[in-house]
Amino acid sequence: MRLARRADDEIALGRYRGPLHGIPWGAKDLLAARGYPTTWGARPYQDQVIDEDATVVRRLDEAGAVLVAKLTLGALAMGDYWYGGRTRNPWNLEQGSSGSSAGSAAATVAGLVGFAIGSETLGSIVSPSTRTGASSLRPTFGRVSRHGAMALSWTMDKLGPLCRSAEDCALVLAAIHGADGRDAAARTVPFDWRAERPLSELRVGYLRSAFEEEHRTQEFDDAALEVIRGMGIEPIPVELPARYPLGALRIILNAEAGAAFDELTRSGRDDLLVRQTAGSWPNTFRTAQMIPAVEYIQALRVRTMVMGAMAAAMEGIDVFVTPSFGGSVLLMTNLTGHPAAVVPSGFTEKNTPVSVSFIGKLWGDADALRVAKAFQDATGYHKRHPPLFAPGAP
Image (cartoon, rainbow, N blue to C red; front, side):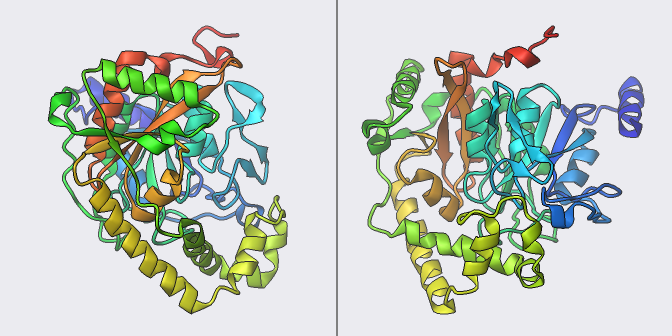
């Protein structure tokens, strides 16, 4: 309320800070905010208070945005189960919102906040955005400082906006990107957002094998490709490098997560986490202790090769469109650090959303968002509201 009054007073005096001034927003609760609990969604940390603001919190405060909520996340950034229950999909309350940026996606789509900040290591922005119909950006690795955010994987973690449109994502990214001297991986690279940039200036491709293989959302993805062609673009077929053992590279995430939560594992407090299945964090952290250092280094070497092969694959294009979970695109682009703009591309017969993703070159976040915006201008799926949360709903 104090920040809201400050925004009202400044705007009344003509001291306008920009498009986010006075806009309410929510932070995924792995971001520190001075004076408030930062629980990481996990019972061992539910009383944790970190006495500083994360860089993104500070930058949004400087932009005049008003932090109104800490938002749920799957415990320690996995899924949509946290120590207080499960975060729900606003379109279907019988269904989880997916995760781990569960509350960030659900609260934004339900209209409870104007936008939210989430994080992704391996699908934690893309997946809940797909499930709830949020419009989101997983930025280039290093585009946004992670200072003040929970570390899961130092070489894969990324922070980004979850919004109601691709253009909103651009407005938020403009306020939060750049180095801060606190996150050694963060860099200041120009973010040249031009909402009306002619599409003719961009070279757009499509991930042909992902569209051609039989998959659950094929009819929506094929329709999305036709919309893109109707925008005056003839997308160029592209393929991702396929000769690398991507599945084996997941040990990079597992080893780094195990190191990040080594103390939790050794203390035995990992027993307090809600989920204790074979694939959930407690057992992943425990088995990570057995990953040989040699294999971790070998995985990093192969990852470097994948990065080079990915750069070669994108040499002739600026952006490519893909089914959000097509082939190996989600794992590969999280390993290589490429940006992904995720937007709704239709609704199933059960009135739940599906998505399509636009992958940009490294530091090509603005290009991915520009094509995503054009797609949204041509379709309007992002303007739909869940019936229970639509304006005027009881």
